[in-house]
Length: 234
Image 1: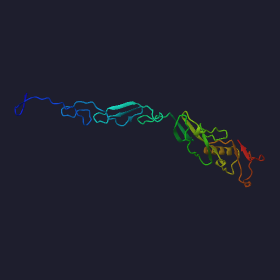
Image 2 (image 1 turned 60 degrees about the vertical axis):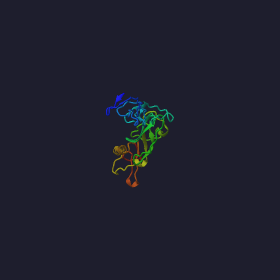
Image 3 (image 1 turned 180 degrees about the vertical axis):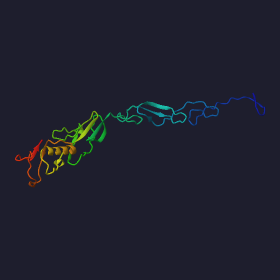
């Protein structure tokens, strides 16, 4: 028996069934007033999150935010190239550069044992003829029939590689006008050598001197008759 605190009437006690916990907002805590009991919680995984080596998901319940399914990347999808989180398996690559003199024309990250993509033919200047790519720095050397021209577009690479453009020079590129009063010999050779080296990056071995017409006189190998010649070698 117990008495009502208001009217004083005595009444029999009766058991009241337990209401049980409720969690309508799925935050893992009972919603009933004055309860607040922590309940078991079913996680709702969010989208994959990742860094360079790991991936995981986070429970979307605001009061939970537990990290779920954390593990290292495993590239077992799409022919062993893709992780379940979407990360692609990193390729084993090397850097391949194509240079025109000191200027880098193209830089590529090329997968090991694959060939690079050959860029468009570069240019050097008037009179130069592009002859291909070589796997060494030719400096001022010009192409000859003995030059080992590379085939980068079909040559697989195994390490970082530089290819350099190499050129030949057409006859028009090295033509030069010398004053009519210049004495043939060391002075004229120095002028030709200076112009070829400074302008075209080459040192001549054979130089042919010609006169536009007979009105300019006679050309002698040693600047003194009678040793007339039309070709001077040095």
